[in-house]
Image (cartoon, rainbow, N blue to C red; front, side, top):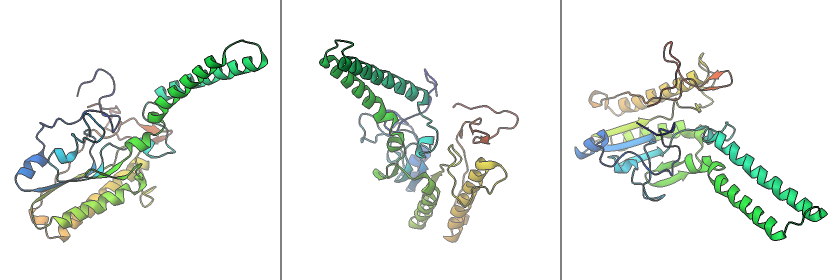
Length: 277
């Protein structure tokens, strides 16, 4: 994927663009062969084209009959106490400019009240209005990132906005097993796109501190447990001998990502680099 800047992925759910509709996905191929297809978990291949609800890049337009999960991905803003991940430097710059305008208005008011300057009230009001409009323009986006990006959908319906990431593992597991139960009598494709092990490594209490490899290891162990539960459900429905299970991975989180002394990314042998795809 090429880009004229460092942003080579979709950074906003509302961003225009995504997987082209003429792409042939394996879900679309199997759907044409009579399979019931479902995607549970993370999509992050775009959602809209021209408007916020046209959903032209939605999974249901790429061969999936059922979707439960987030159209975006996990980011730090999905947990309110985490350091912001999207546009942190830009947000700091906007705050600085906002504070400059506020200081200017305060100085003009003080000068007007004390008689040190003869600026007109209309001028002060105009500068104040411009400052408020500037603040609203950027804060509506960067002040509510969790509201705009951290969303859970079932097909086209919003279930959570913002989502509760701490409960995402249990819900994804429940939805996966339910999909298998509903479609056990016919051919189906279940694509489980885990939110693990992407930063910020949201891990339930049951697995926190369980691994010898920190939070990253805890997150891996929880994902492994979830895979085991899904495979057990396949076995319990008597589908083991005619079910093909395939494991794959995307680029994962940035390998060098850390939170203080805590490693949040993974390791690639002796090479510790941040892959860009």
